[in-house]
Length: 408
Ligand code: IZC
Ligand code: ZN
Image (cartoon, rainbow, N blue to C red; front, side, top):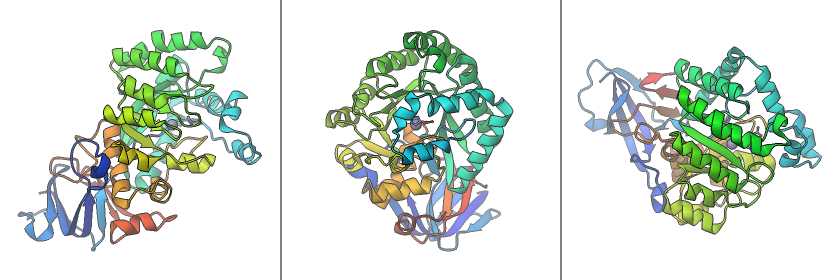
């Protein structure tokens, strides 16, 4: 063994290589007085401290009786963008709705202007700072979307930035192409033309470079319709992308049903998802990626997480970090809201930000739980047990983050 974490007060982890749903979502393993053995960045032992096999020569990390969990997985972020949109705060306070800001040429379209104007290096530097902050909150794997280029060249630029970031700092990043995030200004009078551009130029170009695994779309009133979403995601599958969909965030327009129909890996937001949509997603074993910090920031209702758990739909929780509706990288805030507003138990919420987040980005084979054979990604918390982690809010409770067996 190269490294041993010993004197773990409480080890908490979900188990398995697939999302946990229904009653299993809260069915986590808890071991007191535990230890973890690591070789070549991979977990080779988890269990009671007194049953640890020979580890002579290994580096010892004394966890001081603290809580240890898997590294967190932030399965939904819009990580790479130029500028910010602080001007929208006063508009919001004056009662202007998120979609009305977009309709008037602001919102996403404002960030598109600023992202197009930024060069690759500037975006890399900003992204690196964001990722360092995420790591500090305990995130060891995340997803990142394009969608602020909205033309082939600038979508590719964003995705290349994500690739460079993935290769040059500790957090593993899964890349998502989201050319269908909004209709850009130059196509304002020709939305069919923009959809044609996505289908015939962007999808093939992104597939050719092999720089995105997933394809996402903003299926929402006044953005992309369910029919357009079906069309784009179906075509994306032909190019080898795995579909994702921003569904039923603001208006209930049937996005959850489309997610099930195209057999997406996940659907995101789902604040207004119908019972039927939830049932269909559960049947097809999708993951519901819920974004409570966005409900908080937009002052919207919270997704019906309890109904989803009782419908046997796997629930993940992520930040939705973006400059408009969720300008925060703090996944711990999302975790607190998951308990306080979704009424998930601490055990269910832990699964939501670890194994189920990993499953939503097709990483459940390699991370999301502390088990033999998985990457040694973990957080030592300034907390004695899981309840404490979800009960204290507003402070960053991370003590140390370990990624691939290395303290980062
Ligand atoms: O920049 O407003 N919801 N896309 C869908 C966003 C929020 C990002 C943004
Ligand atoms: Zn989003």
